[in-house]
Image (tube, rainbow, N blue to C red; front, side, top):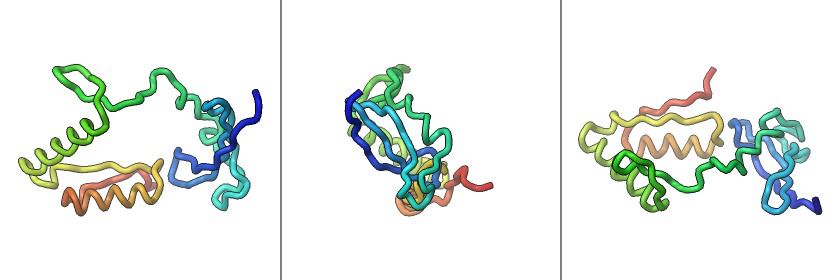
Length: 136
């Protein structure tokens, strides 16, 4: 193994926002360590942040959207998948009203992602039906 590229990023396992340094060799993650300059974790990480990255390169990982057609999941373009989602949400909202739609946020997302999620539900969908797993 030659010189690895070091990429600073934020861990995606929870909403804490720990800083990580991801070492990449030939476009593959080979090591992850805590970023000592990150104010949140000062170089410390949990076991998931440090070692749970093999899934990124798993052969069974989805790399494109899937839409069920005639009872079978088939690959779709991102444009087709987004259009499908929009049409389904519009149909539900028109037929049953905005309160027929709910959304579940996650502590694994950043605060910014959770903010946009609730904003989408309240302004676009017109519903306060949003919940999350980040309460104790």
